[in-house]
Each structure stands twice: as C-alpha cells, then as structure tokens.
Amino acid sequence: MMIKRFLNQGLARLMAYSPAFSKMLVASFKPLETDSVPWTPVTRPLEESTIALVTTAGVHHKHQPPFDMVDSDGDPSFRIIDSQTIAEDYTITHDYFDHRDADRDLNVVFPIARLEELREAGCMGGIADRHFSFMGHIDGYHVRTLINQTAPRVARMLKRDQVDAVLLTPA
Image (cartoon, rainbow, N blue to C red; front, top):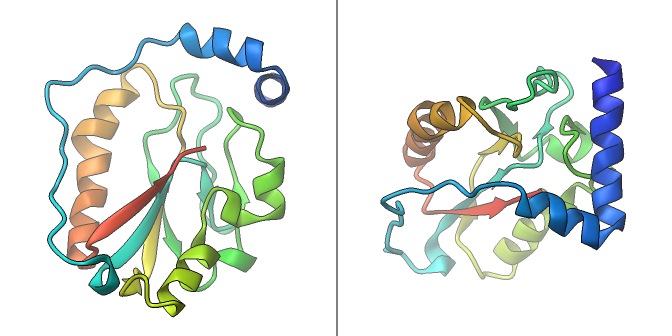
C-alpha cells in the first residue's frame, strides 16, 4: 500500500511539473457520457443566496476516516465539512494531485475564507453550516455508485440545509 501511494504521489507531482506528460495522461481517459445534464435554474439573487462548497480535493477533518487510497477505482464516499472548524482541522487524503500548496493554504481547493469575504461584502446571502468533500478520482464501478447513490444523497442534504447554490472546486 505504501509503495502504491508513493508512486501515485510521484505521478501527481510529475503531472504538475510536466504539462506534456499531463496532457498525454488526460487524453488516455474516456469522459463519462450522459443523456442529461441536471442543471437547476437560478431562482434567487446571489445577494440573498446561501452557498455551500463541494470539493473533489479529498479534504476532510483530521478525526474523519481518510478516503480509500488502496482501491484503484477510488472512493465514492463523501465527508461532511464543518465550515467553522475546517481551517484549523483538516488533512487531504488524495494521491492523484499534488496538494502541497493546498496543505499550506486550504483556500486553494476549499475557498471558505474567500466565501466569508464575499458574504461580508454583501455579494451573497450566507454560507452553509456544512459542506461536502469527495475524492476526485472515481473510476470503474464506483462511478455508478457516485451517480446513483452518493451524489443524490448529498443533494438531498443540501436541499434540507436550504442551500441555494454550490461552488464546486475540483482538484
């Protein structure tokens, strides 16, 4: 397991420093095809809207279980992020991107401080109390789990929290 994680982390760093290698690797993946796009029209002005963050950077609180880095198809689960404590209590479990900058400043992949600045400036109504984090590397049979189970569950939780819009931050 440690050797595989080391190789994944090395590959992520190589991709960060070699755009040609990165393009070649990205071109080898087949995009997910779908018949529909689940867009929802905006119904409330941004100045009155409550916003939540959803990230695919593998961010989570230190006390939460890490994302599964052993399964080569990824981990379709999610972690609930508390906006009040995340800035001082986080780690990133994701070997498929170089997250050294995000380790130093969470706002690189989870811009909670930027949302707070926008709220204080009156650009948005409010910030949700909880946010959601996924591991962005999902492949194989986990894709269907993500689409049919995990994502709908998170969407229901966002609706219950009366979130009007989500800022998705990929890694």
